[in-house]
Amino acid sequence: MPKHTIYIDMDGVVADFDGAVIKKFNPTDQERHTAKSNGRWSPEQWKQITQDPHFYRDLPKMPQADKLMSLARRFRDNLGWNLYMLTAIPKNNDMPDCIYDKILWMQQHFPDVTVRFGPYAKDKQHHARLGDILVDDKPSNIEEWQRAGGTAIPVTDDYDVALIMLEKYYKLLN
Image (cartoon, rainbow, N blue to C red; front, side):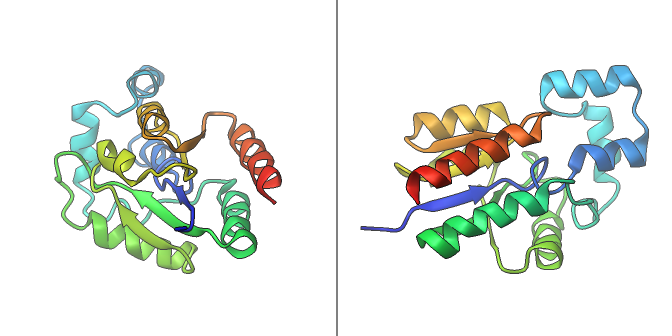
């Protein structure tokens, strides 16, 4: 029987994409609210982001990322699961160094975890198998993963909820 896999999303889960946008471009409260509601920054803001060719390489780590990755490693180290970062390239593929920069980011922050690409966010569901876990902040990825038969742990503004859910799931399996 193949091993189960736990996949961790990168942007918004372990890498602070929105925090970097806010720090670098200082969007208004309305722009932040609109981005949060739409699940993406406006085309004008995205154009600004793409002007930084190494935006992904320089993202700060999310405050709870180390705690999440420590828990994910327990699935790998204690239960024998595979552990991968499952991330995506921008849908317009307009940041040519994105793949390289995300790999560099992971080598700096979590060198023991291999990076896999969707390649696009909409493709993540194709990695799902019954029993596999995805930890992600994008509601559509969560829904598609579950429809494909996987278990999904949503990361929301209350990051601790995802940690609690993953810990409970781990305890059920251990």
